[in-house]
Amino acid sequence: MKSSKILSTISLLFIILFGSTVVLADSIDRIVAVVNSNVITESQLDQQITMARQQMPPNSAPLTDAQLRDKVLQHMIDVELQMQIANKMGIKVSDAELDKAITDIGQKNGLSLAQLQNNVQQQGVSYDQYRQEIRTEMTISQVQQRQLAPTVTVTDQQVKDLLLSSGSQILQTAPTSYHIQDILVSLPDSPTTQQVDAAQQQAQMLKTKLESTPNFAKTMPAQAGVQAQDLGWLKPADVPDLFVASVQHMQPGNVAGPIRAPNGFHVIKLVEMHGGTVMQHTSEETHARHILLKPRQFETDDQVRDRLERLRTSIVNGEDFATLATANSQDPGSAGQGGDIGWVGPGVLDPTFEAEMNKLKINEISEPFKSQFGWHIVQVLGRRDVQDSKDFERNQARQYIYQRKFQEALQHWLQSLRTQAYVKIND
Image (cartoon, rainbow, N blue to C red; front, top):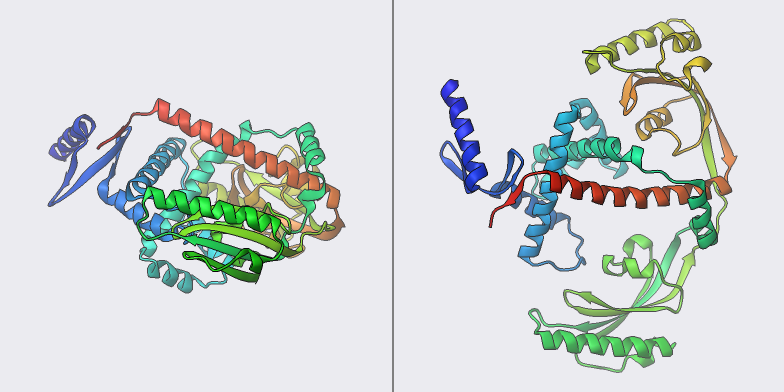
C-alpha cells in the first residue's frame, strides 16, 4: 500500500512537470491536458470527439479535424473545472435521480427505457457511457445554479423596456408551416479559394435578382452548377437546419443568403407562412402545500428522507398536514400557514419541485424528493385554469432576459475559473 502511494505521487509529479504519458499496467495513454491535479487523456478526448461528430446537425458549418479537436478539448477542460468544484461542494447525483432523469428523457421522446438504450448503442455509445454523460450534465447544472442563479437578477423596468421594444411579438405563435424556395450554387468537393469566391459572388447576384423578381422561375434560367427547387410547405421541424436561423427572422417575400454549406452557397426565399398570430394564453394554476426539511449537522440525505417519510406516514394515517407542517417545516415563507404556498402558476417554483407537484392528483401526497432547497413532501389541494395573457407575456420577457444574463454570467464565470486554475495543454 505504501509503495503504491509513493508511485502514485511520483506519477502525478511526472504528469505535472512533463505532461507526456500515463502508464497504467501494460497500456500507454498520452496526456493532452492537465487541469489542476487531474488530467485529460488522448483516449478520453477521442471518445468525446466521436460523440461530438455523431451529435452534429447534418447541415452544420463544417469544421476541420483540428478545429473540432480544439473545440471539444476546451469544452472538456470547462467540464473538468466545474466537476472539481462539484466535488468540493459535495454535489452528487444519486442513481435514483439519474434513473429518473433518463426515464424522463425517454418519455419526452416517446421511447421506453429499452428503446432508449438501443438508440444510444446504435450511435456507437455504450449505455454506461451515456449514463455518465447525463450524470455529469446534471451535476454541472446544479453547480451552475448554485454559483450563478443568486447573482442574476431581472428588474421590472428591464421587463417593461423589452415589452415596449418587442410589442406583442413575445406572444406570437410560431408559424405552423413555411413555403420556401431554394437556389444552390454548387461547389466541388475540394474547392479552391477562387472557386469559393466566384460561387459566393454568383449567389449574391442571384439573391439581388430574386429580390426584385417575384417570379421564381424567371429568375432561374439554366446555368451550370446552379440548382433551383421549390421546397414547398415545410413544418418548422422539417426546415433544413442550415436555414432555420434565417427563416425565423424572415417575412413573406424576404430573401436570405448567400448561406454557406459544405456543397455550396444557398439563397432562399420565404414565399408564404401559416400561423404567427397573436394568441390568448391560458395557464393552469396549482394550489399546494408542502413540508421542507434540511439536513442537520452531519446528517446524510438518507437520514433526512427517513425523517420526512415518517412525517408522510403520519399524515397518511390521519394526522393533520398543516399541524405537522407548522411544527416541522423549515420553509419560513409557508410554515406559519401550515405549509400552504397558495395558488401558483407555471415557472414560479423550483423546477424540480414543480415537476414533482405536477405529477400529483388532487389531495395526493408525494414521496419525499430533493430540490436545491432541501427535501420536500408536497400535497396538491386544487387546480384551476386562468386567463393570463399579460402575465404570460411578462413572464416570457423575464425568462428571455434571465437566460441572456445567465449565459453572460456563465461565460464570465468560466473565464474566471480558467484564470484561477492550472491548465496546461500539450502539443
